[in-house]
Structure formats: C-alpha cells, structure tokens
Image 1: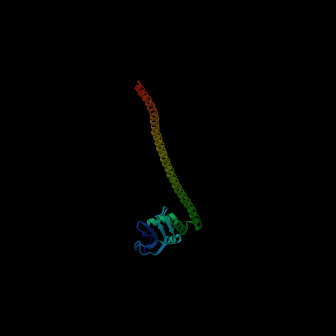
Image 2: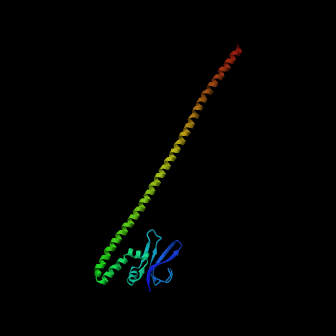
Image 3: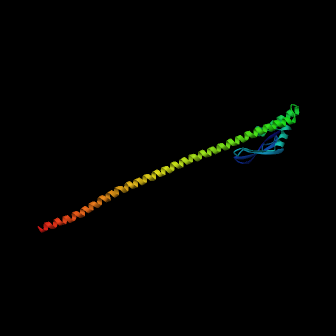
Length: 196
C-alpha cells in the first residue's frame, strides 16, 4: 500500500482550508484517510500552517511520500532536513549529537530569515500607509487652498460690486443736491420774470 501525505480540501467555495492527512494513494482526495496531522489555511496574508512535527517526521521515516505542496511545507518546517540528517545518523555518517547541532543551527538561521521577512513586510506596510497618508494630506491641503482661493475671489468680487454701487450712490447724491439747488434758482428766476 502506497501511503501519501497530502491535502484534503474542506471549507466553503473560494475560501478553502486544507487538512494535512496521511492517506492511501488510492483513496479519494476528500475521502478516507489514515491520520490527520495538521491544517493549512492559505487565505491569511501569511499562510497559516499548523502541523504535528513529530507525527509528520514519523510518517516520513516510515516511507510516506508527500505531495509537492506538502513537501514544500515540510521543507519550510525543517522536517525534510531532519530526515536527511537522521538517515545520515542511521548510516553512521555522523552521530546523533552532531545531527541535532546541525538541525538547531539550521532552525536558528530559518527563524532569523523568517523574522527578517516579517519585519520587512511590516516596514513595507508601514511605508505604504505613510505614503498614502502623505498623499491624502497633500490632496486635503490642495483642496483647502482651492476653497480659500475661491472664497478670496468671491470676497474680491463682492467688494468690486460694492465699490461701483457706492460710487454710483455718491454720484447720485450730489446730483440730487444740485437738482434741489437748481430748483430754487429756477423758481427764483421764474418769480423774477413774473415781477418784470
């Protein structure tokens, strides 16, 4: 019986979650399995892999063959490297202590690279957020400036409209005074003519 470590799909449409299962190669994808050893959720920003490392390593050592996706997950977790070192120990190429030291050093390097990657992603997100904020600030400042300019133009137009009206009213007032002054003079001339 060929045993595979593979993914079994579950979850709803377009939001699939996968179980990492050990199953007979002849069994259907979502069908019968021997043991469930973890889950895989690709829907999160950083894909969430939950895996029982001991059981997965035991199945690898017993000869279970992982599919390509599961192989990548096992490699990411360091289980394939652990298998490689354990085979070296079995063949007598190294001792168990040497294998453990090599695996521990590899895990430290892997953790450092993962932390660096997470930090760079966080920095990138922060930089994008800052850039969006600055762009939005510039747009708001431009909008405020345009509104202020329109208000100043409206005030200038209002002052310009008031100034000719004041000039017209000041011109009309002396004309009225002149006409009132002319009216008594005209009356006086008419009276003088009557007397003559």
